[in-house]
Length: 272
Image (cartoon, rainbow, N blue to C red):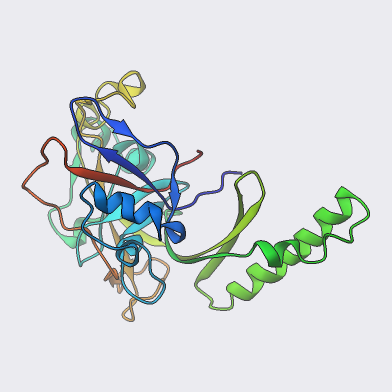
């Protein structure tokens, strides 16, 4: 089973892309890390990236489907993700008469947006270091098996407490070779509709041979929209649902980038 966490990779744009080693958890950006980012040209604060009480960048990033990263890009729930992440849903809507994989798909109105059974997105609401609570009582364990039983019981109690709100889900993930444990609490939205996708000749150009190469020459994207009930809360698909209003969304700049610009990647790596 994969454990997903929201993290940051920092890149400085140059003729050769150079990245610092490793990734950073959002709740661990204070101090040296955020100061180093700011020295490279980052203009925001750690609170602008991760905050429990205020809208911030973490609220614009989702786990899409089973484990891709997606980004909210409008106040009306519009979501951007990779073409290969949306591929399965595009495929399920395709037919001989409407071959969306070959020809692409674009909804010309909200009514034309296509619902996707089983597709959901998860928003990280907060994370917390729960190492002491997970390891409570393990020092007296007589064996490794007894220690694991105690930890499993502690984890069950912690996640159960975090899931008191009906729409919340909680997971505890070990970090740093099991020396720390972090609680991640998510809110899942289950009404996600296909808005647009380019033809596979664009969205999957180069296929895996070209994946992770730089520069890439592919339009690897697809567009979806998240829907909610009238109170902006998660709801099963219904024609009465309305576009979700995100706490935060990314505005797309048309100015482009220049050599030396600060750049960071904020998302959910499958592994690190």
